Image (spheres, helix red, strand yellow):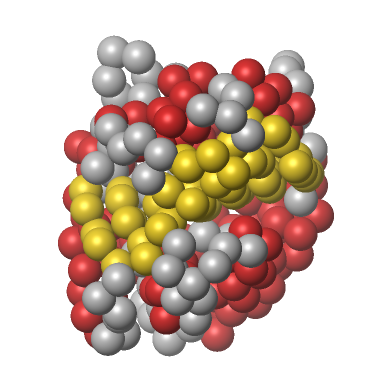
Amino acid sequence: MDRNGNATAPFLDAGQYTADSIQDYELVYGKAFVSPGGKACADDLIQKMALAADDVVLDAGCGLGGSAFLMASKFGLRVDAIDLSENMIALAQNRLCELDSPKTIQLKQEDCLQIDAEQKYNGIYSRDVFLHISEKQKLFSVLHRALKVTGKLLFTDYCCSPPPWDETFSTYVEKRGYHLRTVADYSALIEQAGFQVIEALDRTEDFINFSEQELDRIETLTTTPFVKQHLRSDWLAKIHRAREGNQRWGQFLAIKITE
């Protein structure tokens, strides 16, 4: 972690996002995906942005590149795909080669807080990434600057209920180094950065449904007993946290209305 509490590449690559862990997640979410709902959910969210072919999009925290591939191949978008994790970017390069991805995707290892673009993007898309960032007001200011006027910001993220939390959830958040906000807090932060908030949804029930489907998929995997048990335990714990109410899942859509 850096001095402000934001995740760093070494912290991610040595912890949650080792190469082996990333590929285990991919077994569950589907080829080139590491976020809830996999390809189907990504497709729905990209459609929600309603961007035109040849528009330029930033995929902030692109993971293995599955969403970037969809944006380019199905929707005709030009995509700058960045991720802080060096392990993630290295594997994403491999996946996009395997998928014979369009030349309109540019992959780069980069920190969201260090984006220096101004009025470049028609859209910014991110999936369950901002939980790693403590300086959220700075983050949304950076993203606001990077968007063109009328550009759209769409993201999902792990959220939380208002504190106090139970001991199990508090320990989980501390161990992961997460910086969680309520859906309402996120909405306020986005608005403070100059966006018009179109929707701020608590989609926890959908998250539970996705997770239950993914748990069923885990049972069918042809992998080692150790990996299967590890994934099963992770997913059961995730479902439990969401059902208990401390862990929430938010979906947000906002528009930049002025410079």
